[in-house]
Length: 253
Image (cartoon, rainbow, N blue to C red; front, side, top):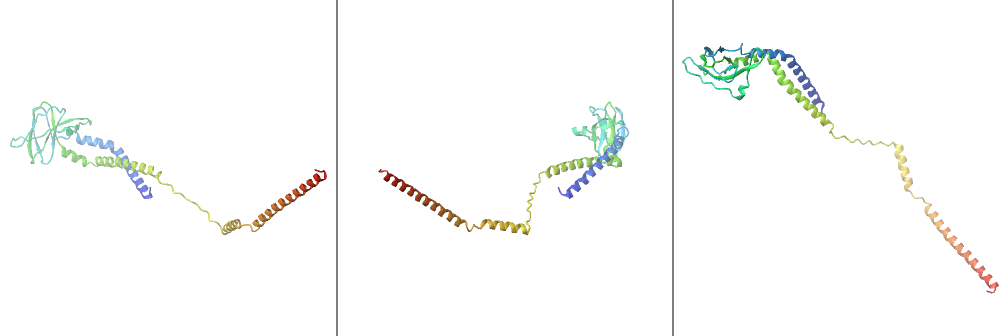
């Protein structure tokens, strides 16, 4: 791995560690502030008991959610100044999971109806059920969360620190595994001979390659000696044969 890549990986690892430490340090405080700003009992536009109604001023391009302690009761109505009913819609399966906390942080409030108005005006909310309902402004609650510095610091450090830490961990393992797979370079070391060594080697090769000038003479002499020895042996044999013949003639054979 190149030195530049190592340096950047170390820097990113350090940044991720700092972000995670910031998140850990601000987690408790940010959680308390989130509960405080989302607590339905303190952050509602209107609270109505069963059979009651109330006037509330609503703005357009906002969503207003009616919550109860149970999601089985949907009896609620919203009318404008002229008495015309404003149609709302029931939360879908995903929105029903977005329960709201109480002062203890327990998610006990269920969304049962969502309204969106077309103009800024006063509206009449009617609770036709038997249980208490609360009307909350989702936009105002979200704005309060994003305007809190501690909450934002905790959210940003969490959203960046953990993914960045995971990325650096994966890249570190990737480069660590790859460094053992690089082909090893074969280094051939050839010793350079000195002038004396070259001279000695050349002369020794030349001396071995030159034939001995007296070799053929020695071989010729060796051949003549063999022939002379054979002739001498034959001559000696003839003498012995002649002596044997004379001996037999003397004996009358």
